[in-house]
Image 1 (cartoon, rainbow, N blue to C red):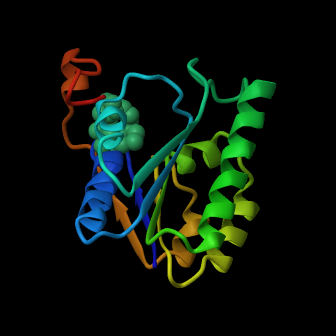
Image 2: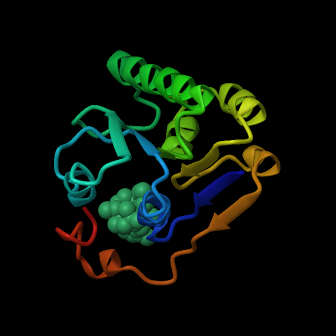
Length: 169
Ligand code: ATP
Ligand code: MG
């Protein structure tokens, strides 16, 4: 089935990883492809290196992507990641595939919406596919079996707490 975790509240990437942990607990293979992220700071990436059957690949640069000011390298690496993800999904080698922050990549124009719709239409029924990231285009909802919008009611960010180690990264 196809799942989407979107909305502006906290908990999309961590929910997808939680799902992945659940799946590997049953000895299923999991793949997470991360878009927009290229830094080596994420606690979850460090932890997942020690978990067999949970593969993670990052296709992002270390620098912050600005909407409306896309760089050649950003487009290139995102396209590479999308191609990689498509091949892995079609291989049916994984029980669960997580495309982390792909919704933002679409919203920013790094991946064409039509290409993602094509992928969702052709996703093998043996594969559970999860798309995460805020700003998911509503056009994708009809191709998904599960859509969760996480709404921000409160976030410590509003009180000046920016990215906390071990909590936000
Ligand atoms: P998490 O990775 O903690 O599950 P997320 O995937 O839902 O969060 P993103 O939209 O990917 O959140 O945001 C990336 C970063 O911003 C994360 O460090 C996250 O903790 C933080 N964040 C998430 N929601 C908010 C918010 N409403 N205000 C400020 N920062 C947020
Ligand atoms: Mg996230």
